[in-house]
Image (spheres, rainbow, N blue to C red):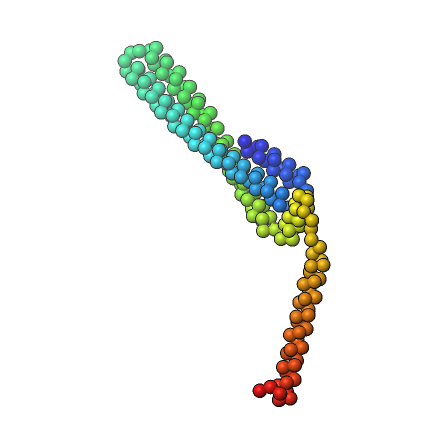
Length: 185
């Protein structure tokens, strides 16, 4: 399961143009969520393997106990049968212990990769606001909306702002002159 997430993430990094950071972040977030689900699944599988080992160890102890009891009563056939079962349980335990070791290593690797993805997601999430705004405008334009002429609007606001500043300056100069010539208390 985790391999498919890794493959999608590698494809995302390789193929995705970074011209649309919002789409990139959405894909990264989706891959991160899938990776977290994969890690949780791996943890569950690890617990199942640990339970299987415990069950096999109990069955091994039972087979060894039956073999000892059969040896006390001269029953060679039961002793042979108990030894065969004990051998099977030992082999199964050895296989499960190797499986558990591999699962732990795989889980540690997957957790590191998720941490790296999370760091990358957090690092990009606070990314450039201007890029995000541009991507939003591209989405709106793609949906058929017209983009207003922001340059003209900014120019109009600047002219209004300049005229208000000039008015305030004139008023301040007038107040100063009135005060200077004693026309105002």
